[in-house]
Each structure stands twice: as C-alpha cells, then as structure tokens.
Image 1 (cartoon, rainbow, N blue to C red):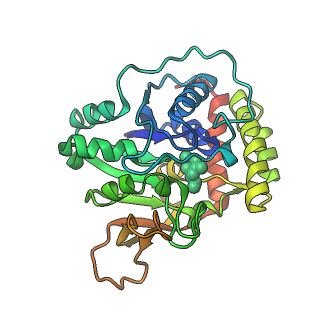
Image 2 (image 1 turned 45 degrees about the vertical axis):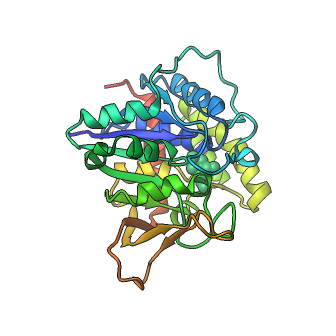
Length: 314
Ligand code: BDR
Ligand code: CA
C-alpha cells in the first residue's frame, strides 16, 4: 500500500494529542515528523507535551520545536481549556524522548525541498511555522501536496464571535498560507463542533483497555470538564483529530470549494475566515472547506486508531 506522507504541526493540546495518536500508527499514513508551535500553551510546554505523548504511545517520530510566538501579533494561549501545562490531566512518567536540534521551520524546508512534492502538511495549531517556512524559502510552495488544517469557521468563532483560536492566534500566518495557492482543506468549527466527545464515547474508548486508550480517557476527563465549564457542552469537541481522520477516510467529510480570505484588518472580526459559501465575490476557490462530517464514522476511526496500539507493530 502507498502510504501518504504527512508532517503534523501542532500545539498539544488535548485534541492535538489525539491527532498524534491517530497519525503515528495509521498504516495508510507515514508520519515524517511532528513540528510544534506556541498556541494552546507556550512553546516550552507544547514541545514537552508532544514528546510526552509520543513517548507514551511508543512512537519513534522526531519532534521539532518551531516558533515561540506569532509572526506579527502578541502571543495568546488557551490555558482555560488545556490547563497550565497545555495537557493537564494525565500524569506522565519521566521524559526521555529528546527534542531534535533542528528548528521546525528548517526541518520543514529541508524535507519539502528533498521531496517529490508528495507531502501533505497538517496543521492543528497556529500556522506560524508553515507561514515562516513559506516566507523563508518560497521554493517549498510547489512542493506542498496539500495543506490540511484545523482552523477557522464558516459561521461562529470560539474565541471571539468571529474567530477560531488557531486562526486568531496568528491570523497573519494563516493569511500567508491561504494565499500560497496550494490545495487546502479547511477543517473548521462547523464540523469539529459536531465531534463532541460525550461521556459514552469516553467509556467506549476506555473499554479498549490499552495504555493509549487510557491516555485518551485521562485527556478527555480534563478536556470535557473545561469545555463544559466554558461552553456548557456535555462533551468536548475533538477538533484536531478530524484532520487526520479525513486523510484516513476521504469519505468522512463533505467538502465545498470556496474562496477563503483571512481578516487581518478589522478590529471586531480579526482572525475570521471569510468563506464565500455562495460565491458572491466570483473569485476562484482557495480552499476545500468542510461543511459536514459523518460523526459515527469519525468515532469508528478513532476507536480503530486506538485499537491499533493493542496490535503488534507491523
Ligand atoms: C483549536 O484550538 C485549540 O485549542 C485546539 O487544540 C484546536 O486546535 C480549536 O479552536
Ligand atoms: Ca491544536
């Protein structure tokens, strides 16, 4: 089987952690590296969290630390949702997995330039690293097979009425990426807010009974509590793994091509992904935007992904 090559750029983050779990053992994907950026927490925290998760799940995937703050605006974090470590809940054993010495942006440039143009870049945090790489070495642009991002929303935001966290946290970076001309799949709140991790889902995954499903349960216990406190939902939306699940199963999402522009100018709507759903602007589409998700199919993918850790590694 041809494995699709991916690089995951993330800011763990409870839902980022689940994205890592799904990507690292998926036979149809080849996870070339995990890049980390400041987002849900400081870079110091997010890079440690990525290493903790990869060590826990026993995945031999290199971790590269990237940018410690956005390109232009001041840093924002999401401590209310993910806690003071960025991954509150589980107790991790002593950390031995090391960080790679190379900067994530350099890793991305080097790997894309050396590639056959067959690497998909998945971002589940602010898009700073990718935008910086595009600015530093424009020759990588043609080498990106596709950008798949969790971010944005056709409708409402989750930090302001207009903006979703990953885009708001570095809207200028998102704007650079959306204007790159490369194929983009935008997995926004319109679909990820349907992937609510209700208590029965946590129980279902817990019944798998391997160390990775135990980590899933410990993560979701914290995540769902904070989501309930802030948004009043009984289950936390598992945003980031929807990106990986959509690569595993191309039938998962309903996509609609649209012209998408990032608002980097207005005061109220800064960070909004303006999605021209009805084609008012008569401009060419710039992204395939997720408009619907098959939710039972998603949870089946998550369950299958966690069960893979009960099997011998191929
Ligand atoms: C996004 O923001 C972060 O808090 C999550 O990890 C996810 O990537 C959802 O808006
Ligand atoms: Ca994230």
